[in-house]
Image (tube, rainbow, N blue to C red):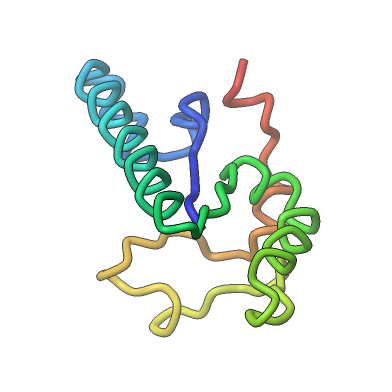
Length: 119
């Protein structure tokens, strides 16, 4: 599963807000590099006859029930995905993974308006 984060979502990240404010060209270069890496990974797995699923980060945030159904179709052995699951400090959220979310995906999506960052 590859996750693509639309460029217009940069205002949702406090780290990126600062980077764009101070060095927008650096952000654009890093995003272009990341997109190319995703394309290369997609090509690689497709060449092996195992095309990956590409997930739009925005769909994960604002259409989590739909994405859970789609992921279950692609990864049936994964079982049910709980979009209301709240990450636990020290277990899911720790310094090494840089995860900043303190609520479930569905709750996070409901608390943020996509139009606030994507105008």
